Image (cartoon, rainbow, N blue to C red; front, side):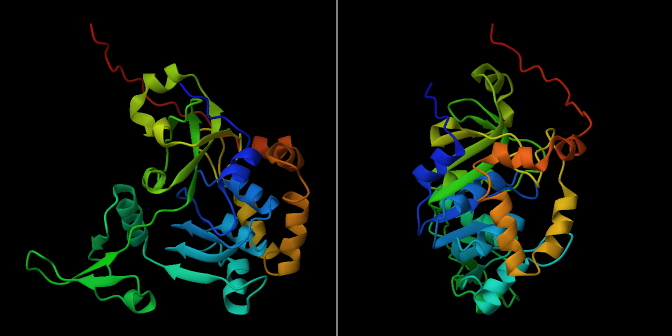
Length: 305
């Protein structure tokens, strides 16, 4: 049993380098802001950021000058409005120009699946009648070899590094995730390197006792980072709720690039790690995010006699 634990600082220094493609996945829940902040703190540059639904963490990373390109399927401050830093980068090149490569949600899932299974492309019907292929030349049409109508295909996507936040893992990286699950499994298998960030490190016996929750096997994981509240202001089901106050405040704060720079100075560059970020946030704020208990039913898998 290989112990793959390391700090966030060590994981990012070891696996994320300038010019790489990085996917920080998580569909609404379990978005690893802690990893994004450490990438900013280590001043990485010229990254291609990949994500189905870029939200505040990519807005912050773009404002910090980390990225030169983004591959995505939807972007916005969910339920609030636009991502103002990304918009400034695309429309005005502030702080640097940002190239966009856009797909539908299913198109991004298809790219991850093709990447994970090492397929040359993934077919999908949802682009038929859409203008998206005109905007993205990588969405192409092929003839159906079985005689049907032409069908759209997207190429495989293999990020250099994937960061997946989850509730728990053992020291080898066998990772369990529950609640609202997105494409974390697909991106983990598609990526060349995988950093797993978890709320809790548990004994291997805990993982073995509930095998159906193991979304990512340790054999593909490169690093395991124990980072409680690493997904704040998004949420980890059963550990803390979404900090809606943060998302609402970001809409106003992000209207001006200078205000984001000041926020980054205070909350990212101005703290050495996530523990200091949480101390600055305050125990009272974290207490507000504590969810009520909602335990799942017990399942007896049965032991072999």
